Length: 121
Image 1 (tube, rainbow, N blue to C red):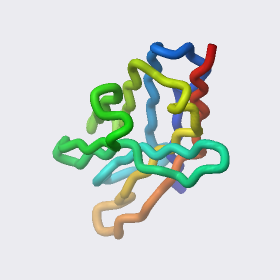
Image 2 (tube, one colour; image 1 turned 90 degrees about the vertical axis):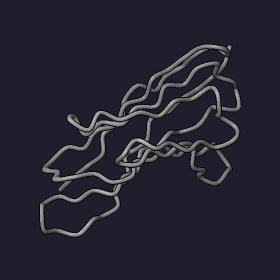
Image 3 (cartoon, rainbow, N blue to C red; image 1 turned 45 degrees about the vertical axis):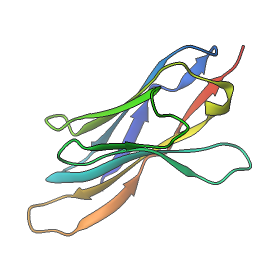
């Protein structure tokens, strides 16, 4: 079974930076689009950033210019560099990806367990 494992969350002051990482455990043949979502208490989960297998990126308006999504295809890892953090960025951040486990298997959608980011003085 494949699991997406996130790391890098924590407590940071406003204006600070954090870098989140996400990589699958288990056998993986290929990964298509990879995404970061976030969910704040009492709010719906929202899409923060997307990176395609070819490296094209998209961002939510609220994080443009501050967050950068990237991936290392050799390590099957996606990153989210978060700069100029604001209190409203406080949320649980989730990794999501379309993964093909074997050459002739179908793509399946996987979620990480979430990592908490808290921006506060």
